[in-house]
Length: 363
Image (cartoon, rainbow, N blue to C red; front, side, top):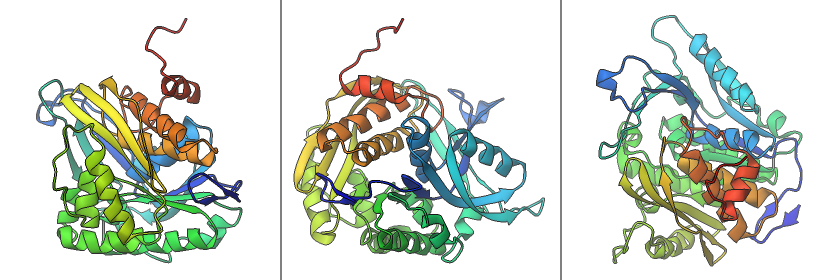
């Protein structure tokens, strides 16, 4: 164990550096063509919680795992193959597909938009296997046996059903008992919560989850709608102004004093392909703000998970809070330059950009 500058005892070793709990999905992406006119799609494998594990393994070289549902049919095979390709160790609860109605691996549909036309995201999560996951489905003692340094889940998985939220709490309590750091990405998705109880259920469920959390990721809307924190009295000067977010953190920490780290990205969207990008982290009462850069966005989906995984990497490898923030900011920025939800960056590229690297050609 090492007491870090974060006020957390981060285990120095374990069979897994990080373990995520969440749903695996496949995203159909027709690029810049709207779905109503699409003739072909790329398939990306994703999941808010999985993306973090995939990024930490593939870019940052950590040992990571994913606990999730897996359906034994060709789409499940495709997803499982991509999980292996990203270097993530799977812990699956298997489901049989009946050949007609499922259970299914969820589908996300998302065109990228272009210029003044925004991206559009919608789902088919009908009879989703991951929504059927419940406490008791995983042998946590076996999973944690060799040691897990960091446990992560998120609000997307929490919103899927009554049982997924209970499973998150079960997993977090086991993680705490084994000395792992626990993180949660609020990732508030109105469409998902609407069909599983709405905002009032969201705030009561998320409050129970956050009692177990050390590191919280979420923007102003996530804090307002996920945690029921009242909105700020003074409007921010711009989307890149962290003062409103910082003000809201005080309320979060009053409600949940065990939370040691709160972080978010700061994004000003000028057009679908041009964003200004920053990030902020609150660590034990101290605030660090990243530089701001201009992004030429290829695919914005997964940028926030890219930020979270870079931040977690910095924390797991003993970087200072300011440096960990920069690594998250740099990795999130790079992630928007790739198609798909998971990383194609190398750790050297991330470190170079975090130091203020440029996009000059590397010969």
